[in-house]
Amino acid sequence: MISISGYGTLVAASLVLLFGRVLVEKTAPLKAFTIPEPVAGGLVVALLMLFAQQVAGVTIKFDTSLQTPLMLAFFATIGLSANLATLKAGGNVMLKFLGVVLGLLVMQNVIGISLASLLGLERHLGLLAGSVTLSGGHGTGAAWSSVFSEQFGIQGATELAMACATFGLVLGGLIGGPVAKYLIRKVTIPSASHHQDQAPVGFEEPQATRLITVNSFIESLALIALSLAGGQMLAEAIAGTSFELPTFVCVLFIGVLLRNVLSGLGWYQVFEREISVLGNVSLALFLAMALMSLRLWELAHLALPILLILSIQAVAMAVYAIVITFRVMGKNYDAAVLAAGHCGFGLGATPTAIANMQAVTHRFGPSHLAFIVVPMVGAFFIDIANALVIKLFMALPIY
Image 1 (cartoon, rainbow, N blue to C red):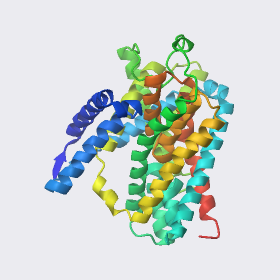
Image 2: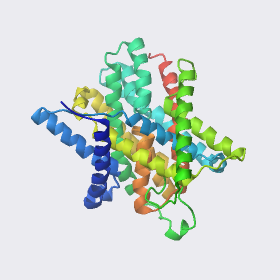
Image 3: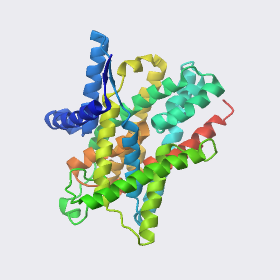
Image 4: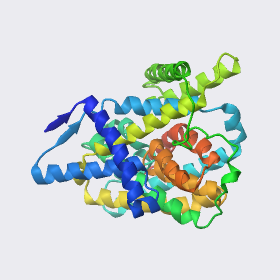
């Protein structure tokens, strides 16, 4: 066992990002299918770790204590970037996209339960390999695993949930680019002049130059810290109640509240350029840490039937994004970017969705609409909707 300290893990994550950038630029298939840089670099490291563990018996353990704070900081910046006036302007599109997302949640659980029944498994295992861990991710999977253990007697429910969520995280980062590439052939890409007078929106252009100052940077950092502290307090206050939500949702909510209350009272205007810089840094490092520290050999503990269900879920996600998401959202360039983002959080998590969209827009051009809609739906509304859908399925007579 080789243990890497927190500082060493941070250095490794930075190197993974640099390696991923070079890998994508120099590898034609990765560039053609717009695979996100953290996914490319992180998976290579995870595969090397798998080789070391299986062949040499050497296990490398990273100290990922910074991973959760980085994820929470990313969601805080999403909240601080949420201007309610802007969200109101895109309200109809957001509601339409939320409807598409709800359809996927239902489909994932129907597929999971049906396949589990056909394969001779208990049906609630199909629900665990459905929206609980795919659209829900690691947070929702961890939250619901105790329920599955207590109510259905599933042994190792937490480990199974984490493995399913990990499988989804990997596939979510891999299929978004190919789906977008397929769809972009069918649309007209907006010309550069179409966006030349518009500033980048939030996480839309991570490579864009943003002028910042020391004082305003500290102010932005303080707002993120307030969002983290307030979100943690809120999560603890509602824990165990019917209003219980994951900590990252509470952090995002506090960020939205801070941004819009301070602006509404005329006390302070959030410096969006700095918030997006801090958010993009947090996002990149979080994804690099999450993927490079994957213990791929643990996925072998998944029974073959569960792996089959998850593989079919990944195919179904790609088909759904092409047939439903793209068409309902307008069959244009924005719809193609939205479809790539939907693959990210439909199988993995919102950070994966943002990374998918950034990879697409970096190559083909901006999509302001996608970067307004996906962060809020994927990071906030989906968890509330998913909780309702899960409870609905658990209330069915089959359980």
